Length: 437
Ligand SMILES: *Cc1c(COP(=O)(O)O)cnc(C)c1O
Image 1 (tube, rainbow, N blue to C red):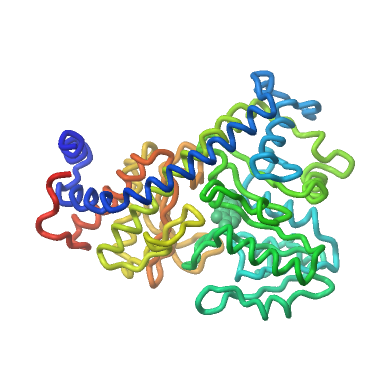
Image 2: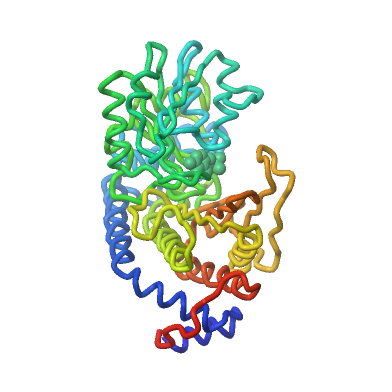
């Protein structure tokens, strides 16, 4: 649409060459966009039917305070999550303050001294390393006598089944599997791969608890880990399932017994799910879950466009634009610090909040061995279902792009990021783009 392109050019100062280049890439993504929309539609109906089945009404939007006994909205929300995830039970709480916290509660509630954790798909997410005690940390599970084993992927990122078989022993109590690539340049695990891995593990030790770190994975496919054998799935409400509206929170879904073990660790033995006031947050948790499938679809479109644009320019991407997507994170190997910084500055510039500030690499990030640049202009601090990009400033200068509450914002983010790179002479675009878009 000519009027739209002119408006973008004039309002955001984007060169027509950049706009034409992006529009050309977009044309080729139409079939994949249609598939993303079809999955979103399926997931929308899944959420909708769970809300209908549980007779959600405005009585569920009331606020409780204090102990939070008889919080009807909280209990109904947990039943809706359980239904959406095809699980026996759910714990969905503002008192789960992050994904890391929800995972910590799920682990510490279900493990006892002498038990062992197995990670059969490489190292877990950075923050979990301290929780488990892979890196020394005060209060880690290691301090409570819980041990840890890890089996890395093979070179082609397939599972090392022989290694996994050998690692499972009489102490192995819980297997933790990270679905998303997180901040690794590896493929995220598809539901089909999770299913295969979990059934292999259960064939060796049927009573082991299989927990999936589901962060960034919710609603990317039409099934969730708990549909294919996971005993627990855990995630953050300021990522996919909060739909951008949840201002805080985490969830743990799965087998009744394991969710209950987590609940008594979150609150107190003897109290479990019965306490925990929601302080008026129930309605945004419901509404965020309701919007989540389309928000995830928006994020996936932005990720796909990023992959396509940078592949066309000759960069290595993970996943590639033609790969099956299993999370909302898009990684691009930029191979230069200048490019990473320009890209992140563009994402920041395109934000609704803090668009006027310039992100710079922070040399003193706790837990990181190199400076890190983070671009985010979010309504909720740290919310990475909102459009954001981060990169450690070290070779091969990989940038991780994720989120976008609306597809149009994601698209503009990619445009402004490319514009920042183009303006500095860091990318070359072909002389004549297709000026007809
Ligand atoms: C974000 C994330 C976490 C941790 O969640 P926080 O809310 O940042 O604490 C854990 N695992 C994965 C794969 C993640 O993406």
